[in-house]
Image (cartoon, rainbow, N blue to C red; front, top):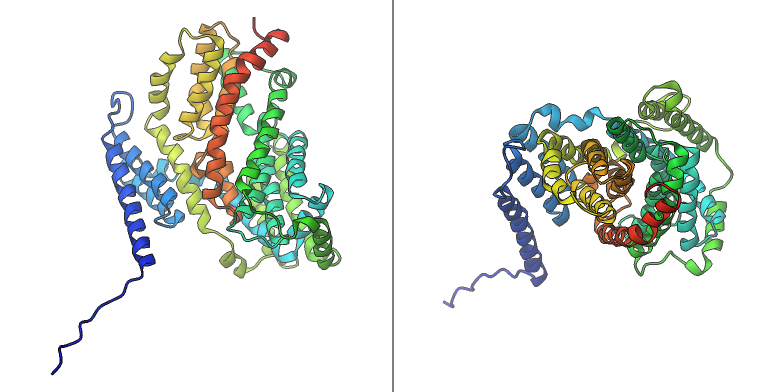
Length: 485
């Protein structure tokens, strides 16, 4: 008898490499939080559960970056870990009591209706043709339109974001762009920039300046007027918007729109293919406008505009309107809501752990006895650091009083530090850091790995700009108009 044939299993080299990569990712995801747990923290200042909070939070962030698990699973597990081992369920699940998950649900329903009826494509194609018919012209046109919209739709940055994300989804669909590509991310990022960066251009443009005004005025007893803010910050806010536009091209990289040399002809042809304006499109537009009007007129009727917007979206299911049905709920990205609330829970639990007091106590002594230029620069860097653990609103709420006291000690107007501090609130890399950025991912046409490098560059670029602009532009300009001596 011959020797028995040995059995062997051939494992492709590619599979071995993927297994090794996955093993390294899991090792990093478990090792880094383990090491973070042993970082000494002042337990007399923060909650005794602070080491657990940091370890769980770092685990989630590393898991999101390495993508070892679905992002929704990571966010949901993080929320449960907080509730079981760190804080009360009321804190861990507090995000569900805010308006953001519900307005996101409403927007998902509207976006589905606009996609099915063709209204999203029609608006996107028409808008791109009006802006010049090229990628570059469209991106700059979006930013300029965002500055105008910030005046027309004041104090409702989220409402404007809903509009621009819808436009971006229409562009991705109308141009037949792969929703997981660089180009898709660049188009959506351009719409995101148009909606969010103008929030700092005017006092009433978004929630951040209004929150800053509320906190600092309560601490110093003096209100800042709209025109005063316009004189002090609007020129720099406009420069900031235009500067952020160049990040869109960094996200796009070497990718180009299909048939870009003849893009205007392509846009015109695809618009003609949609045919005449349909009754279903008219119903979608009408219902969405009702929701948006309820949102942006919140200061008149004193009801939560986000919930009015969500109620309007639910009318899509009513007989006679018939813009949504049971199948709609199966097709829209409802798991995203769990991701959104899991990310937001980081800020809620950080407040419960007394993180703001800890960071304030550690950094504020560095700002004492500093020059005006250095103090303003440090206020920006302070917010960038805080924003990795707190939401922008939480940053302003926790630091407003301390910044007011520091400005008074330096002989500055209390708003001098806060005005720069709010630019730090706009710097983020991860979705959990701000609700605006989280909402962008409802589109399903954005990949975080394409956006992170551009957002990291923005943090550094704004820091350099602040360092250069403060002594060369900001302080001389404020002295020229008599704001500081």
